[in-house]
Image (cartoon, rainbow over all chains, first blue to last red; front, side, top):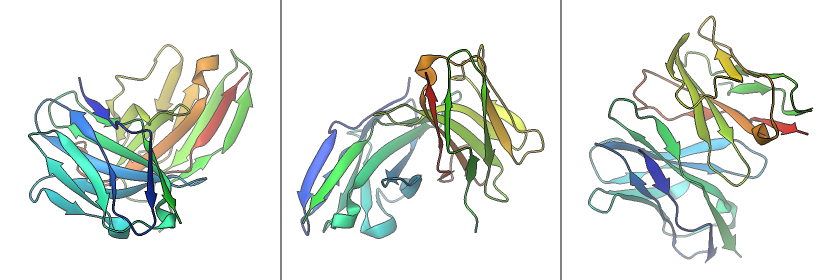
Length: 114
Length: 116
C-alpha cells in the first residue's frame, strides 16, 4: 500500500533562514511526487513535482525539492524563508503501478517568524 | 483562466439527510478528482474521472456516496444518508491529460460540510 509521512506537524523558522519540510513515502515501483501549499482561506496550490530526470526540482516562489530514491524522501526546501511562506504544506505521491493513485501526507504547518 | 468552481461553499445538515456538491473544472481538463479532507488530515481521494468515465473509485463509500460526470465536464458528488463522520471539506480538483497522474492538479475552494 502507498503511504506518505510528514514527520513534523509544525516547523518554525526565522525569516531569512533556510527552511526544510520533510516528506518520506512508500510505493511499489517508481513514484510521481508533488508538493502543494494551502494558505489560510485559500485552496490547495501546486508548488512543484518530480516525474523523472534531475533529482532536484525547482518550483514556484523559490521552493525546490530533492528526490532521493534510496531514502524514499522528497524534502521541500527554500534557501531564505519569507513570512509570507507561512502556510500548510502537503506532500503527495502517486505510484505508477496498476491500482495505485494519489496519496497525500497529513501536512506540515510552516511558521516563519519575523 | 478561470479556476475550479465549487458550490456550495458551506453546508450544514442533520445526520441521515442527503446533500450534493457541484464542481466545474477548468476548461479543457479531462481528469477530475473528488477528495475528502477531514480536519487535521491530508486530502483523501474518493473518486477520479477521465472525461465521463470512472477511473478509480476504490475509496468511495459506495453504500452512501455517489458521483457522476455525465457530459465529461461538471461533476456532482452526493451523500445519502449522511453520517456524523462525513463532516469534512470536500475538494474538487482537475488536471490535464490522461489517467497516469503526470499533471499537477488544480483545486477548487472546497465545500465545508457539517453534519449534526
